Structures are given as structure tokens and as C-alpha cells.
Length: 171
Image (cartoon, rainbow, N blue to C red; front, side, top):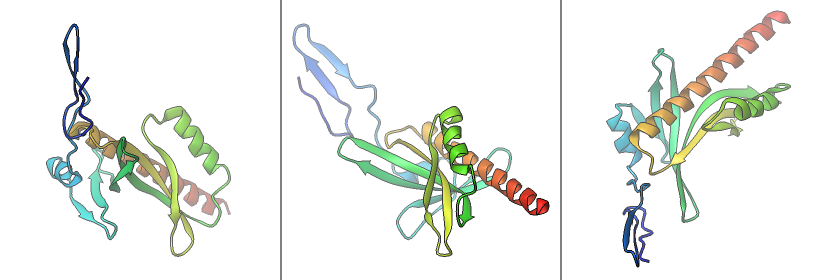
């Protein structure tokens, strides 16, 4: 059996008696992020780390910035990470927030999840929604994942803002 492991080419296998020609159905060429963003007409910039920052506008008019980078895990797994900031939380995370976010991922998230991306210089926790898709994903899948990431982060940002406003009025 002869196969090609190079992801830029479709895998072809020839099997003896009877000879069958198998063509991998998962052979997609990896398209550069810049080309995909241009194709779907999104404004973007590059940050100091070389990650893309796309300005995503949802159908309902809400907007978010989504970061996009390539991640290579070993030789076999190549994914793109997309993330959008849902909030910057000062001090300790609010009671129940982590449990609610984990439950949300289990119950309603088919693509991606919540993560803490670190601390800001003023000590705030950066809460993001992160999605990872294969680098060989189609433009259509890329766009859907991008929109899903933005919408998830926006929805939590709005919920956190609502809680913050109502907590202030109850004090």
C-alpha cells in the first residue's frame, strides 16, 4: 500500500487483488487565514504576536473582535484557534461563575468552550470563548466557527454586564 502523509496532497491508496483506488475524502488544502478573511470580507489586523484580529459583525448588529492563530499539536493535529474576550473580571471570579460556565459547555456547546486566558496588567482575569477547528476546514466552516465564537463571547459579556449593573443597584 502506498500513501501520502503530506497534508497538501490527497491520500491515495492502492490495494492489491482486487485493486482498489481509494481517495481520501478529508483532503483539503490548508488556506492561509489572511486569504480566508479577505474571501469573507472581514476587516482584520495582525497583533505583535502574529495572530490575526478580525472585526466580526453579527447579523443582529452586535460586534466583537475575534483572535485567530494556528496551533500545531504534534505532527498529525493541526488546528486553528479562534477566541473572543467575554470579559475582564477583577479579583476573584464571582461565586458560581466557573461552575455555570462548565455546565454551559456540557449542556449547550457543541463547538468550543470557556477559558481563562491570563491576567491583565491591572490584575483582571481575561475570560474568553475559544473554538478550535482543523486547519483544513472549509471557508464555510471557518466562517461559522468565527461567528459562533463571537456570538458566544458577546452573549456572556452582555450577561456579565447585566449582573454587574443589577448587583450595583442592590447594594
